[in-house]
Image (tube, rainbow, N blue to C red):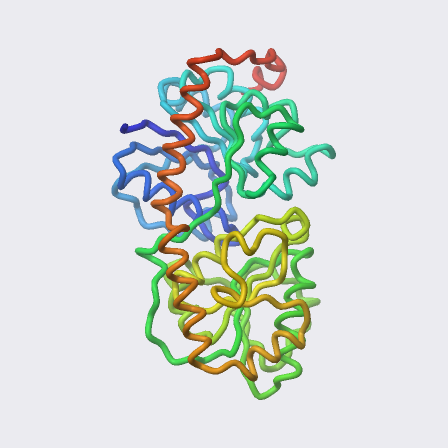
Length: 374
């Protein structure tokens, strides 16, 4: 089964302030290795244009577009003829593009929600990239959140088929490296207002207590108002090729979860898988369903307070630290590589195709005004 796949996503060319990039790259590389022909369509915007860090892919294609009208003008035939068309969360003008795709694509259509908890929390208030009315029009809803969430999307929003598609680690890129340990604890992630309290509690507060230890935070868009302890180094941005080396220099790394993701649960971040693949033990905040991804105390360490983190950093024997890291890496290799996700996409595509053959979808009429805008 060699599929022609079109993905319309936020950005694959730049990882600056954007966790979607490594998620898309890992998945698409794996799909291409499995013989599928993938084209990624990305809106060309200044903040990603100025920070591009994707080497030209050899087995798949990236196409940049400037405006909404280019979707049908330049890529209309490609989208109509594709076996699978996927549009992701946070795509500019996502609702209008989704209406056009679900009206004109002849193959299976899917919405890939890399931000499912945020989407579900704010859907009724109104989003630029998805409306509740659009969900039943997609053959397939690929959810960043697992557990009961796909069932909720089917029951509450009328999705004909919702399935979990977690992020993953590209184990060709994210692998252990030998390096001197510079930092007791580090964190890699873009600033988010609702995630900052976790960073304050589980990294900055322990850093103030363990003043002789060194800590590090890497990521863009942190405001000037953040007060960094003297023993916390700051790195503005790291491209993905530097992530494995960064993790190798940490004794432990922190996984800090956004509020909506923590509340909904079953929503592991891409950094969680990538850090574990690099063989760095992870200290995470607690959220429902984390035990379905990594086994607490054996593959991951959970913390609720600064004291929990301080005790881990100060008291954990080195042999146990390494064992937890090794267990987590084995779990990634067994369950959470990009090849696992590519195989899931194939399975879900087949499932959606069977469903379509058995029952032709009854699609509501598109909204003429937004379709006409394209």
